[in-house]
Image (cartoon, rainbow, N blue to C red; front, top):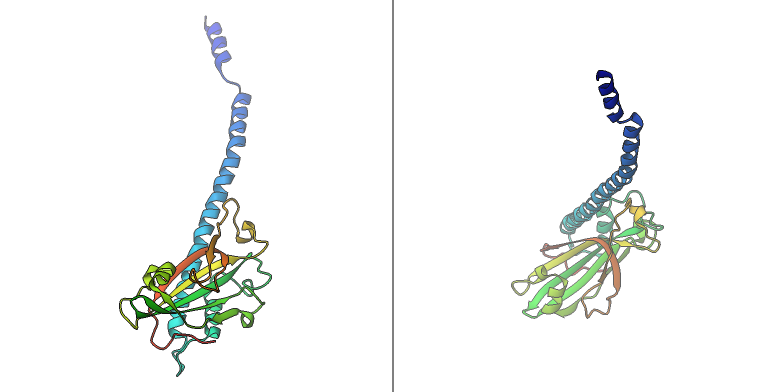
Length: 237
């Protein structure tokens, strides 16, 4: 009886090869999932890292707008000021000349500055300025411009940003919009993404009825409205 019992128990014991086979199968199925989770975690971190860099660049640009003319007798900003502000504020991400042609990351920096001054309840003085690295290969070749002053309606101001609406005549405000813009040949791997695809938003350059309006494709857009110091605006070329 004892010997027979031992033989019965020994038959019920799983073989080591069965254990190993089950582990290998589980391992084979889990590895792709673990790799995908790792890539997703890396992409998630990269997404918020780039978003924070754009946000930081926006606040840097706002600070420089307010301070760049402190040592000058004439405080009025120029298009050259905006190009240098845009260049300096993006160095928290771009290094050396990577924001310029041939754009190794597949993107370039673009900052638009929308100035409004309330003339009456439904009339605003309006000017748009910008500085981008969409052309050239050095800070001296930045794309820059300050448009001529024009008059727009309250609805146009609201369409740009509701925080631009002023409370009294003579009040001034500036919307600073910072983003990365894609170039031809952009691929997500250039920004370090494995799985996630950063979506570019189709936008326009200026108010709806602006003759200078065209479609653009922006990544990681951040907007900030400030009240400029007296004498900074309207800017000039």
